[in-house]
Amino acid sequence: MVNYKKLGLVNTREMFQKAIEGRYAIPAFNFNNMEQMQAIIQACVETRSPVILQVSSGAREYANQTLLRYMAQGAVEYAKELGVAIPICLHLDHGDSYELCVSCIKMGFSSVMIDGSHLPYAKNVALTRKVVKYAHRYDVTVEGELGVLAGIEEKVSAAKSVYTRPDEVEDFLTKTGVDSLAISIGTSHGANKFRPEQCTRDEHGILIPPPLRFDILEEIERRIPGFPIVLHGASSVPQDKVAVINRYGGKIVDAVGIPEEQLRRAATSAVCKINIDSDGRLAMTAAVREAFATKPAEFDPRKYLGPARKALKELYKHKTTHVLGSAERV
Ligand code: G3H
Ligand code: 13P
Ligand code: ZN
Image (cartoon, helix red, strand yellow):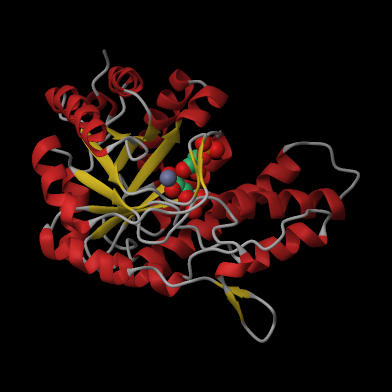
């Protein structure tokens, strides 16, 4: 058993409290390799933003949980070396079982998500309560979820979103004791968040997605004032990155994300954690494809992973400064 506090990591409690009071959101960036981790830390140190390093169970299988834990520990030291000891949380994204959450907590994670959103309500409550009971013994914070996002949620694919029911949230909080709640108000995982027929098009043929359901968010806030809310599936799918990918041989069709101004609006509410993974994947892929196409003689991975890391860092700095408002909060 390794306690995250010994590693210099923090849980989400104080981060979220400050984010709600300051009307901004903490970035939760997914990572599964060194370049992503470096880009996240460099960006958050340079913009003085707290950060949540997020590990999915897929990432855990890809990179090995022990290595990721040491990378997060390394991230704490790396941030100090870069000059600012920003608060860093190591969070399990979409934990799908009690055993997985326990394993991560024992390994040094400071926060876990137990995603029982696909289960019937009573089963979601029971599973989430069990995880909270274990996690709180070690002062590890827990994120639960109510409502189902469309798209891919950890191997489970939902064709249609099921919005969070505001009349369930108080009961869920009381019965489970969770520290934060992920809700479904129209965001979606991946780079194709909406089918073209759900969208309208602007004069250039760019897809305009249906707006987020701020009415549901407001009703939830009314019922649980000041309680930390989480938005998953919050990538904006930058069209310039999609264009670079497609220019250099990629095939990403009808990709559409959540407009940044809607995320900015959400960040000023009780939404205090915003999850972003797909935008990073697009930024990296665009840079790698461009490097391959424009420098075909290069075969040193640093010559394409280096530009990918730089593009990621710029993307993350943009997020903390212009979207989430978490920059200059440390
Ligand atoms: O919500 C899902 C995250 O984007 C993680 O995706 O399971 O492919 O690592 P992954
Ligand atoms: P995106 O696919 O929109 O980046 O969402 C990521 C996410 O919610 C991770 O849990
Ligand atoms: Zn998610």
